Figure 1 (cartoon, helix red, strand yellow):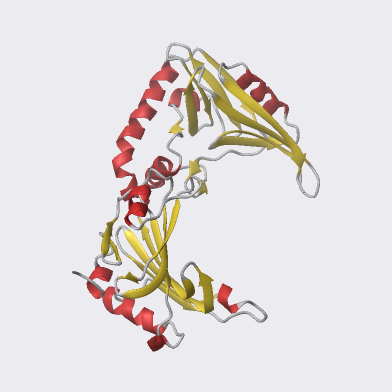
Figure 2 (cartoon, rainbow, N blue to C red):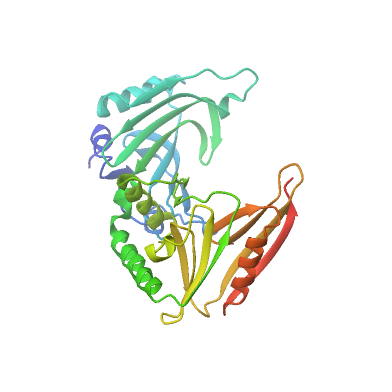
Length: 330
């Protein structure tokens, strides 16, 4: 059975935990079942006890994915203290360096005065592969974790672009379908906002002006993290700016859609959908209005009439329930 340095060098294909090989591309639920674990409360995270990862003694592991039904993108393992390490990073760092070569980044830092040493990272190193990365973090003192007291964490990450490959064609087909719906547009209402809108991405929002490379990376992120978000058809995007959005229908296709200039979310007319309209009044912070059909959403200024009008427009669509929330920006 492969192990130790050989497993470290093969992290591009997957990782071996307690003798079980986990290949990149496996879905979170399936990977969790290998170790008797399961995502909790619908969250795309699974934790479990384990003892060994590529010859490194560990206490527990955690698998993460963008969604429960999407591939594992990250795995982290709490490292067990061993006598030969003497509470220094060199033991694990030397092991990784011998197998992987020089790291792409490495740094040391002191524990700040009066800080909890167990909550601090005093050494960090990262190795980058073509489609995966490996990181090592060493704590300033042992930290209580699932399985005992850990001295650090081994981090593994996989490429979003690779993870998205099995899903991207179907997503692009849905984007093309929405393009067709937009060509049979029956009604479009535009609304203005005070704050600039931006394209969504797995990391939050991208700046306007997407290069082909960034657009491809954004598509992979949407497919994995927000698969219900589709690219806004050009026929709709051409009618919008960075400070406007639209609610439109295609009666011929039986759908309605909410769109910014980049991102759209669509539903069959009559499907039960909840939209959240929030009016947050100024307090310690400024007031603002939001309209969201998760994960799609827009924001504008305090008590925005445009957001209110858009909420009213949604109320007129069969199947849509608009929940109104009020509060203070405390």
